[in-house]
Length: 209
Picture (spheres, rainbow, N blue to C red):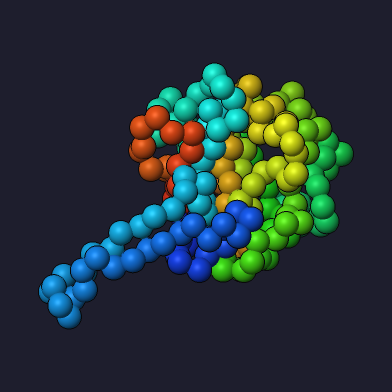
């Protein structure tokens, strides 16, 4: 059994969505003075590897309260879409059989970006045709991608909303540079925070389970 960590490292200089720069990790006690080390952290719910629940973009939908731990675990297909330059569409997906997987994760050229690089406004994303296709041709309950957003410049957020209306969870900010296309067991554990629309998470792939 091989465990692959696919989480984004959280740090003060990490990439943030549209370069918001809203991550702050600061020491509150230092060993030289206090004989103990402690830190505090300030960041948004959509920092690094994180989970989006339906209430992120829908007035009435599921929130993080409604997601059990096991709902973010399951059989996973990692799709290598590294050759896609701009957008994943229905045409990108038609060659794959998604019917046997709980989780579908997309590896793109986004994974080549360093964890502390400036935000790439031209990141690869999924359009509505891809979202519609996955709703129609998969049994997945979780869709993941290797950047800080699954959509790009969609004023009505149609990619997110298509998934959320069908009670599918979105996981963003995965790190897949060293992951090959294929079948895995996916585990993602968001922080257990009440009454929020998303949460930072640790995500792994298990090979050979």
